[in-house]
Length: 108
Image (cartoon, rainbow, N blue to C red; front, side, top):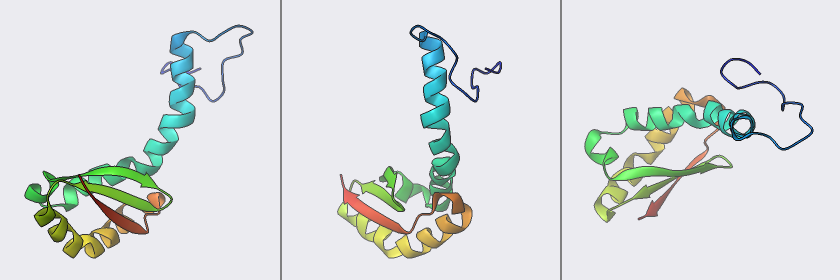
């Protein structure tokens, strides 16, 4: 393992992993790949939305090319629906690795 604790392979042990080792393996295998693929989407989303609209919606999930967004009010749902096509294009441009093809809106 490197000094940050994110090695390329699981530590070679015969017994159970220590908590720190297990956490490092989990981060390397599960969290980092998703963050590298989707982390930019969260940042881009916040930058693309007007501040008032951003206060009333949040990214709920990203799965199979679909960005699911929870919205807390019908008025903001309508506003977001009106600009979702443009938002989708911009997210595709700024975050091509995420391969987002659709934005789905949910009522909170």
